[in-house]
Length: 113
Length: 105
Image 1 (tube, rainbow over the protein chains, first blue to last red):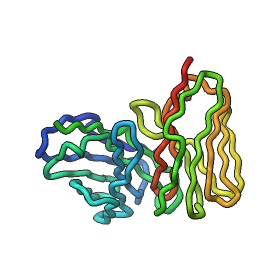
Image 2: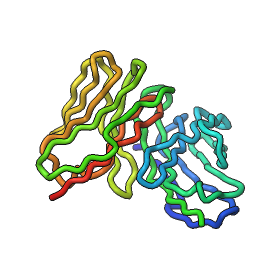
Image 3: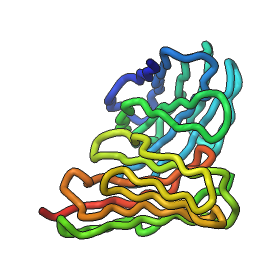
Image 4: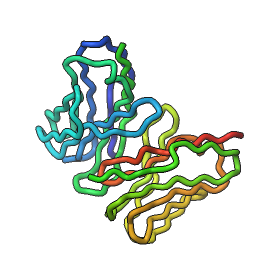
């Protein structure tokens, strides 16, 4: 069966510090991979998605970047965090193709102080 | 992709009352998915609707896809405290704003 792992689960970072959130998917090949952000009590904002190694699409201009160095690995990064980067970050995957169920990781709570 | 609009933003009900959340789009949707997110958790897939006019049921939950495939609804009959959470619709990777349901015992 397929599983998705995301870490760290929580982190508190000072303004201006770097960020790296990592996500891996097991039990499938060539997945589509996603990063979403959810502000407290709000909806899910699509940040990045990837259909293959090295292929990243950005949905909104922001202080974040994403990379996909391996087929089942997706990384969310920032060089200098802002207070507004605080939120709940969710990695997700779908089987290749459109209109598929989205499977989410457990999420990472980021607080920028 | 066009984002679906979801209402209401919040719904507070007495246990045993019914609950409905709605999603609407200005364009025809190929499909729509529904998810539930418990407080502090991550969204979990509930169901997918694909066909025009489709109705699917999961125990007390009824999901509908409009005839024109531009709207969808999730209805919960006789809510229970275990129904608490935020319900999202989704199309083409994009989610509605969600409806947060709270249930008073």
